[in-house]
Image 1 (tube, rainbow, N blue to C red):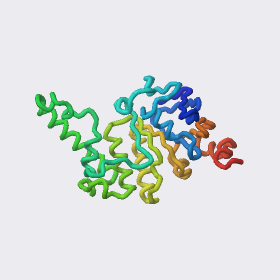
Image 2: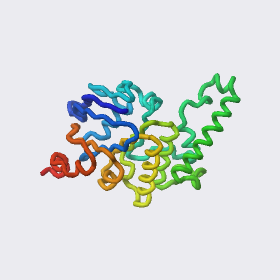
Image 3: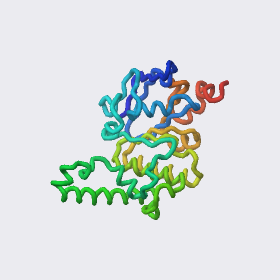
Image 4: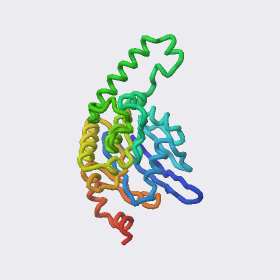
Length: 249
């Protein structure tokens, strides 16, 4: 589904991602781990179009996506979340969800003027979809609350719901459980597992190894921008290269 071939990215002569090659199949939950500064978030930026690679290829479902802008990558089926939840603070939960819906007919002036019936129908369908997803992520009781009034964990759930509005085939999650309480972590893990059963693929940056072991079927490890290991979570735990990268021994 997602394949990277010898991807490179440097900043001011410092190699952030170095000759990184990896492949992720569909309907999988794949982890990406490594010490701080190992290039994980940079790799996500490259996949989703927020950065252009200096070299190498990135393909999704056989189609090159390296160098495409983020909105085209999203339209092609890949969306992402960020380390810090990105929501629209002065909009309600429902409005946040509706803003995330792609290809809205009402965005085009011609449709708004000439195809009002179609626009109204699509708006109704988007609202129905948004309410269903708000219920899925457990925020129905807060749908009319401004996003700025949500807890940090609730904002992360909202961001995940917004990602789902794009009807993606793969979601990249950047530290989805960071900074939230154990109850909210459990909610997010159960939600991800449920969506995987629906056929959605996930690529997850995560520092909590308990989460990685429970959730991920396959794990890639980065260190200094290089992929140093891959395997099941249990295999990775015992890999000498991974131990050295984390502990320096």
